[in-house]
Image (cartoon, rainbow, N blue to C red; front, top):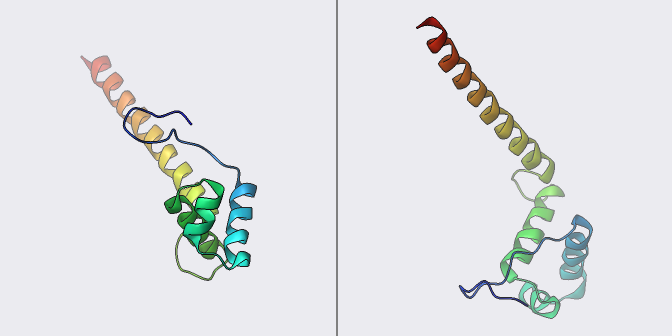
Length: 98
């Protein structure tokens, strides 16, 4: 695996199906999360996050579900775009009145 020069591995992305399989493996195998992560060559922190998010999505722990997180991200993006458009119109109005 290629190094980034700072001792870290390059960022990888995984499908939702793969994450679900890893979570199920953690639950069903009886192995610790750390052991499953080592066996699959994954970061322990990432696997812990996947397991915790699966618990939230299943309603066993409080927190934002995956769908709620996606909606929140979309709303934040829309809010940012609307603010930028508003600011642009303010500047255009200011210069039009000069």
